[in-house]
Image (tube, rainbow, N blue to C red; front, side):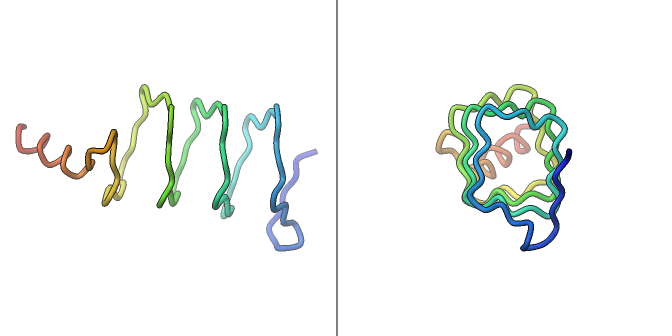
Length: 93
């Protein structure tokens, strides 16, 4: 049976999903601050209105990844500011 919570009484702080199938799960107005995602398949996942401030993505497969309408201030890829990359790209167009 699907679990749906929308109040503090339904808090599941610290829960661990190990070898879990959450295919089709929906997270709305969820606080996943300090969550860790290890060996996770997010193929086809959709993220909207998501705060990734201070997040680190390491050893990720970003093939065919699309980012639209994002705020890239301070964001780096391999140590290079994305805003600088975009500026140079647009200057050469």
